[in-house]
Image (cartoon, rainbow, N blue to C red; front, side, top):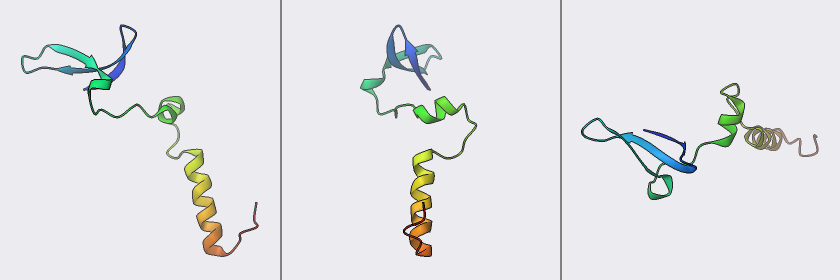
Length: 69
């Protein structure tokens, strides 16, 4: 199963029981929306910037360095 723009619409593509390629509107499914960061990074980064900033804040809290910038 894959999700992509097809015919100008966000669609989910899948093979039915007879091995024919089918598609339905993504809004009709529970398939998650694509991760825009992962698409933009092209798989070159394991972490999002906002997650790294949140991790830094947690580490600072643990170390008692609340004023470190």
